[in-house]
Length: 490
Image 1 (cartoon, rainbow, N blue to C red):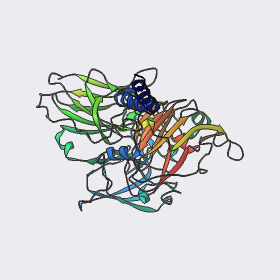
Image 2: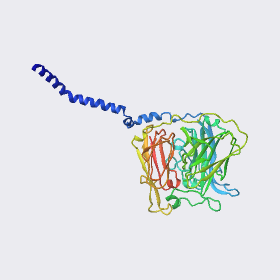
Image 3: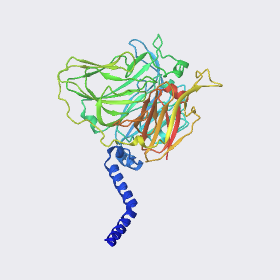
Image 4: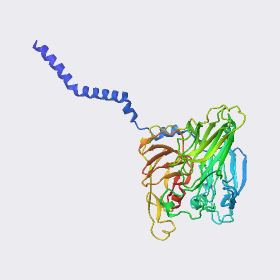
Protein backbone atom coordinates (compact mmCIF):
# COMPACT_ATOMS: atom_id res chain seq x y z
CA UNK A 1 0.00 0.00 0.00
CA UNK A 2 2.78 2.37 0.87
CA UNK A 3 4.65 1.64 -2.37
CA UNK A 4 1.45 2.25 -4.31
CA UNK A 5 1.01 5.67 -2.67
CA UNK A 6 4.62 6.55 -3.36
CA UNK A 7 4.13 5.72 -7.05
CA UNK A 8 0.97 7.79 -7.18
CA UNK A 9 2.70 10.72 -5.51
CA UNK A 10 5.60 10.50 -7.95
CA UNK A 11 3.15 10.46 -10.87
CA UNK A 12 1.26 13.49 -9.49
CA UNK A 13 4.55 15.26 -8.91
CA UNK A 14 5.45 14.90 -12.59
CA UNK A 15 2.04 16.25 -13.65
CA UNK A 16 2.34 19.10 -11.14
CA UNK A 17 5.67 20.00 -12.66
CA UNK A 18 4.06 20.56 -16.08
CA UNK A 19 0.99 22.44 -14.84
CA UNK A 20 2.45 25.95 -15.68
CA UNK A 21 3.17 24.85 -19.23
CA UNK A 22 -0.30 23.36 -19.60
CA UNK A 23 -1.91 26.52 -18.24
CA UNK A 24 0.08 28.73 -20.63
CA UNK A 25 -0.83 26.51 -23.57
CA UNK A 26 -4.50 26.68 -22.64
CA UNK A 27 -4.35 30.46 -22.32
CA UNK A 28 -2.74 30.73 -25.75
CA UNK A 29 -5.38 28.47 -27.32
CA UNK A 30 -8.27 30.26 -25.63
CA UNK A 31 -6.87 33.71 -26.48
CA UNK A 32 -6.35 32.67 -30.08
CA UNK A 33 -9.90 31.42 -30.25
CA UNK A 34 -11.22 34.68 -28.84
CA UNK A 35 -9.19 36.67 -31.34
CA UNK A 36 -10.28 34.40 -34.16
CA UNK A 37 -13.98 34.55 -33.40
CA UNK A 38 -14.28 38.17 -32.17
CA UNK A 39 -15.59 40.36 -35.00
CA UNK A 40 -14.77 43.48 -32.99
CA UNK A 41 -11.13 42.55 -32.86
CA UNK A 42 -11.09 41.50 -36.50
CA UNK A 43 -12.32 45.01 -37.41
CA UNK A 44 -9.31 46.45 -35.64
CA UNK A 45 -6.80 44.59 -37.78
CA UNK A 46 -4.86 47.19 -39.73
CA UNK A 47 -5.15 47.02 -43.49
CA UNK A 48 -1.85 47.25 -45.34
CA UNK A 49 -0.90 49.93 -47.84
CA UNK A 50 -0.04 47.20 -50.31
CA UNK A 51 -3.56 45.77 -50.08
CA UNK A 52 -5.06 49.21 -50.68
CA UNK A 53 -2.89 49.70 -53.76
CA UNK A 54 -3.98 46.29 -55.00
CA UNK A 55 -7.62 47.28 -54.56
CA UNK A 56 -6.96 50.49 -56.52
CA UNK A 57 -5.56 48.61 -59.53
CA UNK A 58 -7.76 49.21 -62.56
CA UNK A 59 -9.63 52.17 -61.06
CA UNK A 60 -8.26 54.36 -63.87
CA UNK A 61 -5.45 54.05 -66.38
CA UNK A 62 -1.92 55.21 -65.80
CA UNK A 63 -1.50 56.18 -69.43
CA UNK A 64 -3.40 56.03 -72.70
CA UNK A 65 -2.39 55.13 -76.22
CA UNK A 66 -3.25 58.01 -78.60
CA UNK A 67 -5.55 56.90 -81.42
CA UNK A 68 -3.73 59.10 -83.93
CA UNK A 69 -6.53 61.64 -84.31
CA UNK A 70 -5.49 65.23 -83.58
CA UNK A 71 -8.14 67.80 -82.71
CA UNK A 72 -6.53 71.15 -83.45
CA UNK A 73 -8.02 74.52 -82.68
CA UNK A 74 -6.93 78.11 -82.24
CA UNK A 75 -7.81 80.02 -79.11
CA UNK A 76 -7.21 83.66 -78.28
CA UNK A 77 -7.64 85.40 -74.94
CA UNK A 78 -8.65 89.02 -75.49
CA UNK A 79 -10.78 91.92 -74.31
CA UNK A 80 -14.28 91.77 -75.74
CA UNK A 81 -17.94 92.52 -75.05
CA UNK A 82 -20.81 90.13 -74.41
CA UNK A 83 -24.52 90.58 -73.79
CA UNK A 84 -25.30 89.17 -70.35
CA UNK A 85 -28.16 91.63 -69.79
CA UNK A 86 -30.62 92.26 -72.61
CA UNK A 87 -29.65 95.42 -74.45
CA UNK A 88 -26.39 95.97 -72.56
CA UNK A 89 -22.81 95.23 -73.56
CA UNK A 90 -20.58 94.11 -70.70
CA UNK A 91 -16.81 94.41 -71.10
CA UNK A 92 -15.13 91.10 -70.36
CA UNK A 93 -11.99 89.11 -71.02
CA UNK A 94 -12.80 86.00 -72.99
CA UNK A 95 -11.59 83.04 -75.00
CA UNK A 96 -12.57 83.49 -78.66
CA UNK A 97 -14.98 86.30 -77.73
CA UNK A 98 -17.40 84.11 -75.80
CA UNK A 99 -18.17 83.59 -72.11
CA UNK A 100 -17.91 80.75 -71.30
CA UNK A 101 -15.18 80.10 -73.84
CA UNK A 102 -15.50 77.47 -76.56
CA UNK A 103 -16.82 74.09 -75.52
CA UNK A 104 -13.90 71.90 -76.54
CA UNK A 105 -14.95 68.31 -77.27
CA UNK A 106 -12.64 65.41 -78.02
CA UNK A 107 -13.08 61.65 -77.92
CA UNK A 108 -11.12 59.50 -75.51
CA UNK A 109 -7.83 58.75 -77.25
CA UNK A 110 -7.80 61.96 -79.30
CA UNK A 111 -4.89 64.36 -78.96
CA UNK A 112 -5.82 68.00 -78.36
CA UNK A 113 -3.56 70.63 -79.93
CA UNK A 114 -4.54 74.08 -78.73
CA UNK A 115 -2.76 76.99 -80.42
CA UNK A 116 -3.13 79.70 -77.82
CA UNK A 117 -2.47 83.43 -78.30
CA UNK A 118 -2.50 86.02 -75.53
CA UNK A 119 -4.00 89.34 -76.66
CA UNK A 120 -4.64 90.50 -73.11
CA UNK A 121 -2.88 93.42 -71.39
CA UNK A 122 -1.55 90.95 -68.80
CA UNK A 123 0.48 87.76 -68.77
CA UNK A 124 -1.61 84.60 -68.63
CA UNK A 125 -1.62 80.79 -69.01
CA UNK A 126 -4.21 78.04 -69.37
CA UNK A 127 -4.65 75.38 -66.69
CA UNK A 128 -6.80 72.36 -67.62
CA UNK A 129 -8.57 71.69 -64.36
CA UNK A 130 -8.92 68.01 -63.47
CA UNK A 131 -7.20 66.78 -66.63
CA UNK A 132 -4.21 64.52 -66.09
CA UNK A 133 -1.85 66.24 -68.50
CA UNK A 134 1.93 66.00 -68.88
CA UNK A 135 3.41 68.19 -66.16
CA UNK A 136 4.71 70.75 -68.68
CA UNK A 137 1.12 71.31 -69.91
CA UNK A 138 -0.35 72.16 -66.49
CA UNK A 139 -0.19 75.92 -66.99
CA UNK A 140 1.18 77.07 -63.63
CA UNK A 141 3.79 79.84 -63.94
CA UNK A 142 6.84 79.37 -61.77
CA UNK A 143 6.05 75.66 -61.44
CA UNK A 144 5.43 74.12 -64.87
CA UNK A 145 5.84 76.92 -67.45
CA UNK A 146 6.71 80.56 -67.94
CA UNK A 147 3.79 82.97 -68.14
CA UNK A 148 2.65 83.83 -71.66
CA UNK A 149 3.26 87.54 -72.20
CA UNK A 150 0.92 89.86 -74.09
CA UNK A 151 1.28 89.21 -77.80
CA UNK A 152 2.94 85.82 -77.31
CA UNK A 153 1.67 82.34 -78.16
CA UNK A 154 1.96 78.85 -76.71
CA UNK A 155 0.89 75.42 -77.93
CA UNK A 156 -0.84 73.14 -75.42
CA UNK A 157 -0.82 69.56 -76.65
CA UNK A 158 -1.83 66.40 -74.79
CA UNK A 159 -3.97 63.28 -74.94
CA UNK A 160 -6.50 63.24 -72.07
CA UNK A 161 -6.31 59.99 -70.11
CA UNK A 162 -9.85 60.05 -68.75
CA UNK A 163 -13.29 60.59 -70.23
CA UNK A 164 -15.35 63.17 -68.39
CA UNK A 165 -16.23 66.79 -67.72
CA UNK A 166 -13.29 69.16 -67.26
CA UNK A 167 -12.68 72.87 -67.63
CA UNK A 168 -9.89 75.37 -68.19
CA UNK A 169 -8.93 78.78 -66.86
CA UNK A 170 -5.83 80.96 -66.31
CA UNK A 171 -3.36 80.38 -63.50
CA UNK A 172 -1.98 83.93 -63.54
CA UNK A 173 -3.80 86.57 -61.47
CA UNK A 174 -6.55 83.96 -61.47
CA UNK A 175 -8.92 85.78 -59.13
CA UNK A 176 -9.08 88.68 -61.60
CA UNK A 177 -8.86 86.87 -64.93
CA UNK A 178 -11.50 84.23 -64.15
CA UNK A 179 -13.84 86.90 -62.74
CA UNK A 180 -13.48 88.87 -65.98
CA UNK A 181 -14.73 85.84 -67.95
CA UNK A 182 -11.76 83.63 -68.81
CA UNK A 183 -13.00 80.06 -68.50
CA UNK A 184 -14.24 77.28 -70.77
CA UNK A 185 -15.01 73.56 -70.77
CA UNK A 186 -13.21 70.49 -72.08
CA UNK A 187 -15.43 67.45 -72.60
CA UNK A 188 -13.73 64.10 -73.20
CA UNK A 189 -16.34 61.79 -74.68
CA UNK A 190 -16.64 58.03 -74.42
CA UNK A 191 -19.05 55.57 -76.05
CA UNK A 192 -21.77 56.19 -73.45
CA UNK A 193 -22.33 59.82 -74.45
CA UNK A 194 -23.93 58.86 -77.77
CA UNK A 195 -26.67 56.91 -75.99
CA UNK A 196 -28.26 59.99 -74.42
CA UNK A 197 -30.97 62.06 -76.11
CA UNK A 198 -28.92 65.16 -75.31
CA UNK A 199 -25.50 65.81 -73.77
CA UNK A 200 -25.52 69.32 -72.28
CA UNK A 201 -23.04 71.47 -70.33
CA UNK A 202 -24.15 74.10 -67.83
CA UNK A 203 -21.38 76.37 -66.55
CA UNK A 204 -22.51 78.11 -63.38
CA UNK A 205 -20.86 81.41 -62.47
CA UNK A 206 -21.50 84.51 -60.43
CA UNK A 207 -20.40 88.05 -61.21
CA UNK A 208 -19.98 91.16 -59.10
CA UNK A 209 -21.53 93.84 -61.28
CA UNK A 210 -21.85 97.60 -60.99
CA UNK A 211 -25.12 99.46 -61.55
CA UNK A 212 -24.15 100.09 -65.18
CA UNK A 213 -23.83 96.30 -65.67
CA UNK A 214 -20.05 96.15 -65.82
CA UNK A 215 -17.63 93.92 -63.93
CA UNK A 216 -16.67 95.55 -60.64
CA UNK A 217 -12.95 96.12 -61.18
CA UNK A 218 -11.66 96.16 -57.61
CA UNK A 219 -10.21 92.69 -57.11
CA UNK A 220 -8.85 91.02 -53.98
CA UNK A 221 -10.52 93.57 -51.72
CA UNK A 222 -9.87 93.33 -47.96
CA UNK A 223 -13.44 92.11 -47.45
CA UNK A 224 -13.04 89.34 -50.03
CA UNK A 225 -9.67 88.25 -48.66
CA UNK A 226 -10.75 88.14 -45.02
CA UNK A 227 -13.94 86.25 -45.76
CA UNK A 228 -14.95 83.54 -48.23
CA UNK A 229 -13.69 85.26 -51.34
CA UNK A 230 -15.55 87.23 -53.99
CA UNK A 231 -19.24 86.33 -54.13
CA UNK A 232 -21.15 88.06 -56.93
CA UNK A 233 -24.54 89.74 -57.10
CA UNK A 234 -25.46 88.25 -60.48
CA UNK A 235 -25.57 84.54 -61.33
CA UNK A 236 -25.42 83.08 -64.81
CA UNK A 237 -25.56 79.68 -66.46
CA UNK A 238 -23.62 79.54 -69.73
CA UNK A 239 -23.25 83.32 -69.50
CA UNK A 240 -27.02 83.86 -69.45
CA UNK A 241 -29.36 85.12 -66.76
CA UNK A 242 -32.18 82.79 -67.82
CA UNK A 243 -30.71 79.63 -69.31
CA UNK A 244 -33.38 77.27 -70.63
CA UNK A 245 -32.95 73.69 -71.83
CA UNK A 246 -35.72 72.57 -74.18
CA UNK A 247 -36.54 68.85 -74.02
CA UNK A 248 -39.26 66.42 -75.05
CA UNK A 249 -41.12 64.02 -72.77
CA UNK A 250 -39.21 60.76 -72.49
CA UNK A 251 -35.79 62.16 -73.31
CA UNK A 252 -32.83 61.03 -71.26
CA UNK A 253 -30.34 63.83 -70.65
CA UNK A 254 -26.73 63.89 -69.54
CA UNK A 255 -26.32 67.26 -67.86
CA UNK A 256 -22.80 68.33 -66.93
CA UNK A 257 -22.48 71.09 -64.33
CA UNK A 258 -19.31 73.12 -63.77
CA UNK A 259 -18.78 75.68 -61.00
CA UNK A 260 -16.61 78.42 -62.52
CA UNK A 261 -17.25 80.93 -59.71
CA UNK A 262 -14.35 82.53 -57.90
CA UNK A 263 -15.66 81.53 -54.50
CA UNK A 264 -19.40 80.81 -54.39
CA UNK A 265 -20.51 77.34 -53.34
CA UNK A 266 -23.77 75.87 -54.63
CA UNK A 267 -26.06 73.09 -53.42
CA UNK A 268 -27.97 72.57 -56.67
CA UNK A 269 -31.09 70.48 -57.07
CA UNK A 270 -34.17 70.18 -59.26
CA UNK A 271 -37.69 70.57 -57.96
CA UNK A 272 -39.92 67.57 -58.64
CA UNK A 273 -37.48 65.92 -61.04
CA UNK A 274 -35.59 62.73 -60.30
CA UNK A 275 -31.92 62.97 -61.23
CA UNK A 276 -28.94 60.77 -60.38
CA UNK A 277 -25.31 61.77 -60.05
CA UNK A 278 -23.22 59.57 -62.35
CA UNK A 279 -19.86 61.41 -62.20
CA UNK A 280 -18.01 63.69 -59.80
CA UNK A 281 -15.11 65.87 -60.96
CA UNK A 282 -15.22 64.14 -64.32
CA UNK A 283 -14.90 60.56 -63.06
CA UNK A 284 -17.73 58.01 -63.01
CA UNK A 285 -18.99 57.03 -59.57
CA UNK A 286 -19.15 53.45 -58.34
CA UNK A 287 -22.79 53.78 -57.31
CA UNK A 288 -25.18 56.49 -58.49
CA UNK A 289 -26.90 58.63 -55.87
CA UNK A 290 -29.50 61.38 -55.73
CA UNK A 291 -28.72 64.78 -57.18
CA UNK A 292 -29.07 67.43 -54.49
CA UNK A 293 -26.95 65.62 -51.91
CA UNK A 294 -23.57 67.06 -52.90
CA UNK A 295 -22.28 70.61 -52.85
CA UNK A 296 -20.72 72.13 -55.96
CA UNK A 297 -17.75 74.18 -54.76
CA UNK A 298 -15.44 76.22 -57.02
CA UNK A 299 -13.71 73.85 -59.42
CA UNK A 300 -16.12 70.95 -58.85
CA UNK A 301 -18.10 69.25 -61.61
CA UNK A 302 -21.16 67.03 -61.33
CA UNK A 303 -22.66 64.95 -64.16
CA UNK A 304 -26.29 63.97 -63.72
CA UNK A 305 -28.56 61.52 -65.54
CA UNK A 306 -32.13 62.78 -66.00
CA UNK A 307 -35.09 60.97 -67.51
CA UNK A 308 -37.94 63.31 -68.45
CA UNK A 309 -41.30 61.68 -67.56
CA UNK A 310 -43.43 60.60 -70.50
CA UNK A 311 -46.35 62.67 -69.19
CA UNK A 312 -44.33 65.85 -68.56
CA UNK A 313 -45.48 67.85 -71.60
CA UNK A 314 -45.85 71.49 -70.60
CA UNK A 315 -43.96 71.14 -67.32
CA UNK A 316 -41.05 73.29 -66.19
CA UNK A 317 -38.32 72.00 -63.87
CA UNK A 318 -36.23 74.61 -62.11
CA UNK A 319 -32.61 74.23 -61.06
CA UNK A 320 -32.25 75.96 -57.71
CA UNK A 321 -29.39 76.59 -55.30
CA UNK A 322 -30.01 75.88 -51.61
CA UNK A 323 -26.54 76.46 -50.17
CA UNK A 324 -27.38 79.87 -48.69
CA UNK A 325 -30.24 81.06 -46.56
CA UNK A 326 -32.51 81.72 -49.52
CA UNK A 327 -33.32 79.56 -52.50
CA UNK A 328 -31.90 80.97 -55.73
CA UNK A 329 -33.17 80.06 -59.21
CA UNK A 330 -30.34 79.25 -61.61
CA UNK A 331 -31.84 77.75 -64.77
CA UNK A 332 -34.75 75.63 -65.94
CA UNK A 333 -35.77 72.73 -68.14
CA UNK A 334 -38.89 73.26 -70.24
CA UNK A 335 -40.73 70.21 -71.58
CA UNK A 336 -42.78 70.40 -74.74
CA UNK A 337 -43.76 68.25 -77.69
CA UNK A 338 -44.63 64.69 -78.53
CA UNK A 339 -43.20 62.06 -76.19
CA UNK A 340 -40.26 60.04 -77.48
CA UNK A 341 -38.94 56.62 -76.52
CA UNK A 342 -36.61 56.78 -73.54
CA UNK A 343 -33.12 55.39 -74.23
CA UNK A 344 -32.71 52.28 -72.13
CA UNK A 345 -29.25 51.47 -70.77
CA UNK A 346 -27.62 51.00 -67.39
CA UNK A 347 -26.17 53.96 -65.55
CA UNK A 348 -22.54 54.40 -66.59
CA UNK A 349 -20.47 53.64 -63.49
CA UNK A 350 -16.93 52.66 -62.60
CA UNK A 351 -17.14 49.40 -60.67
CA UNK A 352 -13.37 49.56 -60.04
CA UNK A 353 -13.54 52.53 -57.66
CA UNK A 354 -11.95 51.08 -54.50
CA UNK A 355 -13.90 50.98 -51.24
CA UNK A 356 -10.68 51.34 -49.26
CA UNK A 357 -12.33 50.07 -46.10
CA UNK A 358 -9.95 50.62 -43.21
CA UNK A 359 -7.93 53.23 -45.11
CA UNK A 360 -8.65 55.80 -42.40
CA UNK A 361 -6.53 53.71 -40.01
CA UNK A 362 -3.44 54.30 -42.14
CA UNK A 363 -1.05 56.87 -40.72
CA UNK A 364 -1.39 60.30 -42.30
CA UNK A 365 1.65 61.04 -44.46
CA UNK A 366 1.21 64.80 -44.71
CA UNK A 367 -0.99 67.28 -42.88
CA UNK A 368 -1.88 70.65 -44.38
CA UNK A 369 -3.00 73.18 -41.79
CA UNK A 370 -5.09 75.96 -43.32
CA UNK A 371 -5.17 79.34 -41.62
CA UNK A 372 -4.70 83.09 -42.00
CA UNK A 373 -2.45 85.71 -40.48
CA UNK A 374 -1.93 89.43 -40.57
CA UNK A 375 0.41 90.52 -43.34
CA UNK A 376 3.18 92.90 -42.46
CA UNK A 377 5.49 95.08 -44.50
CA UNK A 378 5.10 96.44 -48.01
CA UNK A 379 1.98 95.51 -49.94
CA UNK A 380 -0.13 95.21 -46.83
CA UNK A 381 -2.64 97.74 -48.10
CA UNK A 382 -2.90 96.14 -51.52
CA UNK A 383 -3.72 92.71 -50.12
CA UNK A 384 -5.78 93.94 -47.25
CA UNK A 385 -3.25 92.94 -44.61
CA UNK A 386 -4.21 89.23 -44.78
CA UNK A 387 -2.23 86.22 -45.88
CA UNK A 388 -3.76 82.78 -46.21
CA UNK A 389 -1.31 80.11 -45.16
CA UNK A 390 -0.65 76.41 -45.47
CA UNK A 391 1.42 75.14 -42.56
CA UNK A 392 2.19 78.75 -41.57
CA UNK A 393 3.66 79.62 -44.98
CA UNK A 394 2.20 81.76 -47.75
CA UNK A 395 3.09 81.19 -51.40
CA UNK A 396 5.67 81.63 -52.87
CA UNK A 397 7.16 80.48 -49.57
CA UNK A 398 6.39 76.77 -49.37
CA UNK A 399 7.96 73.36 -48.77
CA UNK A 400 7.07 70.85 -51.49
CA UNK A 401 6.15 67.42 -50.16
CA UNK A 402 7.05 64.25 -52.04
CA UNK A 403 4.41 61.59 -52.60
CA UNK A 404 5.47 58.13 -53.63
CA UNK A 405 4.52 57.19 -57.17
CA UNK A 406 2.06 54.26 -57.47
CA UNK A 407 1.94 53.78 -53.70
CA UNK A 408 -0.84 54.44 -51.19
CA UNK A 409 -0.48 57.98 -49.80
CA UNK A 410 -2.60 59.95 -47.36
CA UNK A 411 -2.96 63.60 -46.49
CA UNK A 412 -5.05 65.62 -44.10
CA UNK A 413 -6.51 69.08 -44.59
CA UNK A 414 -7.00 70.67 -41.18
CA UNK A 415 -8.95 73.91 -41.39
CA UNK A 416 -7.91 75.99 -38.41
CA UNK A 417 -9.84 79.00 -39.72
CA UNK A 418 -13.52 79.94 -39.68
CA UNK A 419 -13.70 80.16 -43.48
CA UNK A 420 -14.45 77.71 -46.27
CA UNK A 421 -11.61 76.16 -48.28
CA UNK A 422 -12.24 74.00 -51.38
CA UNK A 423 -8.84 72.33 -51.77
CA UNK A 424 -7.75 71.35 -55.26
CA UNK A 425 -4.83 69.08 -56.12
CA UNK A 426 -3.45 69.29 -59.64
CA UNK A 427 -2.58 66.20 -61.65
CA UNK A 428 -4.17 63.61 -59.35
CA UNK A 429 -7.49 62.22 -58.20
CA UNK A 430 -8.11 61.29 -54.57
CA UNK A 431 -10.78 59.79 -52.33
CA UNK A 432 -12.08 61.26 -49.09
CA UNK A 433 -11.65 58.63 -46.37
CA UNK A 434 -12.50 60.54 -43.16
CA UNK A 435 -13.99 63.76 -41.84
CA UNK A 436 -13.02 64.91 -38.37
CA UNK A 437 -11.50 61.49 -37.80
CA UNK A 438 -14.71 59.63 -38.64
CA UNK A 439 -14.38 57.20 -41.57
CA UNK A 440 -16.53 57.97 -44.61
CA UNK A 441 -17.18 55.94 -47.73
CA UNK A 442 -17.63 58.08 -50.83
CA UNK A 443 -18.13 55.93 -53.96
CA UNK A 444 -16.14 58.27 -56.19
CA UNK A 445 -12.87 60.12 -56.72
CA UNK A 446 -12.41 63.88 -56.54
CA UNK A 447 -9.87 66.52 -57.49
CA UNK A 448 -11.43 69.21 -55.26
CA UNK A 449 -12.89 68.84 -51.78
CA UNK A 450 -14.63 71.46 -49.64
CA UNK A 451 -13.22 71.74 -46.11
CA UNK A 452 -15.62 73.44 -43.73
CA UNK A 453 -14.53 75.74 -40.87
CA UNK A 454 -12.70 73.95 -38.03
CA UNK A 455 -13.00 70.69 -39.93
CA UNK A 456 -10.39 68.12 -40.91
CA UNK A 457 -10.67 66.03 -44.06
CA UNK A 458 -8.47 63.01 -44.75
CA UNK A 459 -7.92 61.93 -48.34
CA UNK A 460 -6.04 59.06 -49.95
CA UNK A 461 -4.49 58.71 -53.37
CA UNK A 462 -2.30 56.48 -55.49
CA UNK A 463 -0.38 58.98 -57.65
CA UNK A 464 0.18 57.82 -61.22
CA UNK A 465 1.34 61.10 -62.76
CA UNK A 466 4.86 62.24 -61.97
CA UNK A 467 5.97 65.82 -61.63
CA UNK A 468 5.56 68.93 -59.49
CA UNK A 469 1.88 69.75 -58.94
CA UNK A 470 0.30 72.61 -57.03
CA UNK A 471 -2.16 72.07 -54.20
CA UNK A 472 -4.28 75.10 -53.35
CA UNK A 473 -7.55 76.58 -52.20
CA UNK A 474 -9.91 77.14 -55.12
CA UNK A 475 -11.44 80.19 -53.54
CA UNK A 476 -9.31 82.22 -55.89
CA UNK A 477 -8.85 85.15 -53.52
CA UNK A 478 -7.44 82.81 -50.86
CA UNK A 479 -4.98 81.34 -53.38
CA UNK A 480 -4.00 84.86 -54.47
CA UNK A 481 -3.28 85.68 -50.83
CA UNK A 482 -0.94 82.73 -50.35
CA UNK A 483 -2.95 79.52 -49.84
CA UNK A 484 -0.98 77.49 -52.36
CA UNK A 485 1.75 74.90 -52.05
CA UNK A 486 3.10 72.07 -54.21
CA UNK A 487 3.63 68.33 -54.08
CA UNK A 488 6.05 66.27 -56.09
CA UNK A 489 5.27 62.78 -57.32
CA UNK A 490 8.31 60.62 -57.98
